[in-house]
Length: 106
Image (cartoon, rainbow, N blue to C red):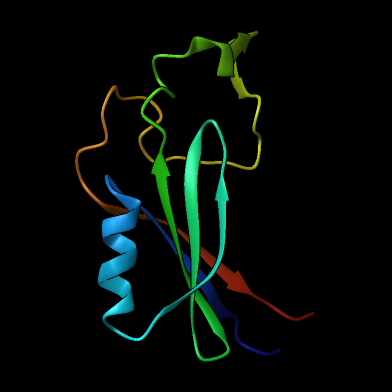
């Protein structure tokens, strides 16, 4: 059975544009971006490998309770594919690697 390989790392940051500039100094290039009411995300690649996803929570995310709803004790978001490491706090204070995705073959 083949070993899994790392597909990408996701980093939750305070300032996505600053992080993007830092990664570019190491040869990473912007491959894709997504900006939604909840977050800004930038996908970086180096050569053919997609390696980093930079995620920054939009400032109004916590203040805007319309994006979250609680039903039977379960919190759901209007944007189900976005995961933020700082969802339960009012501010994001420390840049953090919080998501490691593997690519596996059957």
